[in-house]
Length: 309
Length: 294
Image (cartoon, rainbow over all chains, first blue to last red; front, side, top):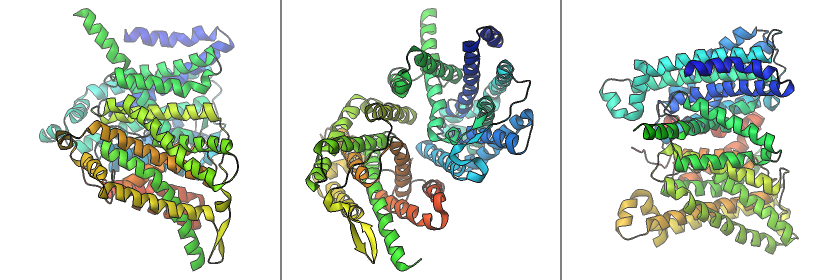
């Protein structure tokens, strides 16, 4: 089934490309979906698998975004080098932030990630000369050969690679240790797992993937802005994970795509839906929290196991 | 810096701090009893501010009575909204994991903030100050807005009132017992869920009160909830989650800090709350007056 999905995703822009202007718009939307899916999956590495609720994940997304924007605009880096640098810079940032954060547990961990996230946001916001402040950085160059379809393919290829790397990580002994820590930290310590080191490492890995996603979005929109680091941006992958289901690898990707699709679909239905989008999203979230805490994937599994038994 | 300027800035900083205290103490109190960090507290505060705006257009005029009416009507109205939210939503997630609780309150942020936008629109608004508080007072040869002095009087009154309520009344005993020993309290025949509802209503009342005070102090806009809730987080983290005394200390530190750092650092002073919050969490995660958990 996975292969079919990938093939469909590869063929999709060719089909959409034949639809003219609307098709081009949907290619752009699909590219954004792929990028945000990567962002959501990156957070879920620590959220769903590690049990660490980070409210500052957008910081690494934003750091990646600004890395690409700054390198390409101010240092004339080619796209592939800038995109390669984004996860590294994000990982270094995540290492520094995470070094402090993994010392705390539960709620305190969440609040500290929030504090660091906002701290980075404020720095980017105030540092006019370097980051452009709240104007952001506009006019990130786009290589000639990268039309909408080609860029979609580039993002899809990167996404598929990241997906397989993440799957490898989750299923490795490292991934199992992280899950053990989520289930029972005391026992994990008892069987000789260095809890903090494992958590820090997963925090860095998650940050790196988020940084790549941020860099990809910058090139898609051709700008980086402070909003990428704001705390409400950190909430997006959490919502996506919750809606899609956080105990599976693809859950967050599905959740994120569903949310983006829903938003755009509602916009198409009626303009006024843009106004009340947050109300719709919030209500949807309430329903999920109250009635389906395991998300869509959880619902699917529930239905599936019921029908098979 | 001359000492006059120092005193002047101190007073302004304390004024900021007092306002922040009124809002943050509600957040802290609710966390203490309900164990839920309410992201929507800022949105509730914003609704209070916008409600005050609407009511002020009806009351018309800048009379002191009209303003007092705002302070008497809006906070209880917000408390009633709090009642509805607690009974219909919060109550269902007390036994769930932290993440779901956080997300529930975040969902409320999305809904409430958008509702405010739909109802009141995006433009900044403000509530006229009553004539009596519109002028300024002469402090050491500098003009200090009387309204700031008013907040400086009301803030400590609220703090005193909360201290009296929490430490000198039976209700306060019950609330404090609910913080430490909810099960014992239930066994003693107290209706714990009613204690939780009332505490949540009190928290909302404080947010609403802060909202009214803010509306007459400066412009109110759609971003105020979001920025205030983060400042409140900083306050309760510094003071210790669930400690009202800690909220007072945290508010005063943040309020005066913001004012004083503006002098050498300009706009960079805005970084201060986050930096301090991170620092406190790293060194002493449970804050000055909190107790370490687990």
